[in-house]
Image (tube, rainbow over all chains, first blue to last red):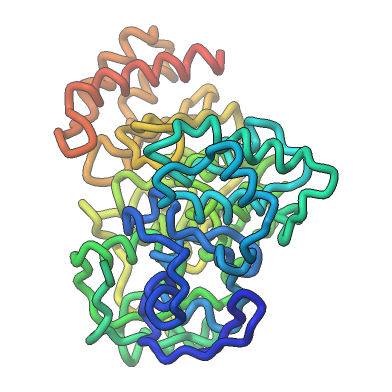
Length: 154
Length: 272
């Protein structure tokens, strides 16, 4: 099965019902995507498929065929939102962080705090109490050029 | 923990006709958004071994009007429902339900037809469809038939669907009167309902509850009492006798009875 992973054409040999999460972590060696609950509640495994945030623990790799998959690794290590999560202490244990960031980068322009909370309703954090996460995202969105890679404003 | 997929068999349908012929000749469990099916896979409770991926069938993803009837393709996602102007203007309670199904990740994959066919008594869209007198359109390679949603479920997680049939669409006639939806869960997003209600305020009110019985239910005695001019206190008492919720991991029968009555009062006040 072929799909585009972080901009690169990728061919995988896993069973077609293997979870995209397992293919990313084990066959592709990209362990930035985390497994949390395994039931679509916590959002730790969030990746983007064709620009939309999804739980990779609920996606058979067959359904990624031909699609563009973006994981946290696809942002590189220098995305402004990654720096803001560090500087605003939006990460503590770090398990939720890749999923939080992948969901947050799909926000449209000039979101209100309510927009941010709604967008992140499917991403749970047990450490930070969310305030620092929301602060990081709001600051990123208020930057003159937020360096967004994808836009959900469709 | 890695999900075990060895021994599972997947076929992928190329078109609706292809899917229906596969179901006729080689019965298997349809899958699309997987927001319920893969939870069972991950927890090791998935019983079926053979699956048919129908997610690519774009002909089941359309929302349209057929005369006065709103026709929603079975593979319409919650996100598409939320973004649809025609659903927003004709059936706002369905948009409200879609907004409260999980977070964006679930709304992007879960489908209305999946919520119907999965037959959970806690399915958030089902009280909306019941209060709206929706019809489920089933198709097999041989024929198509229409079943009112109130006759679609035969018991806990069982339906009138045959193994060779697919839910292809949900038809909703025009809804007169104010629509109202409320879900009570542990959290606003990402929670399975403790109780969920959809209702329409007309001279003959229509009220449907989820998570109070083995299937979604209308409450005809309560509806009749309100239509006949009963006070809300009397109607709430009738409702308490009409529904028979149970204790489970999410809530208790006592809590559900009390909240159901409170929700009935809230519906009546907010739509008066």
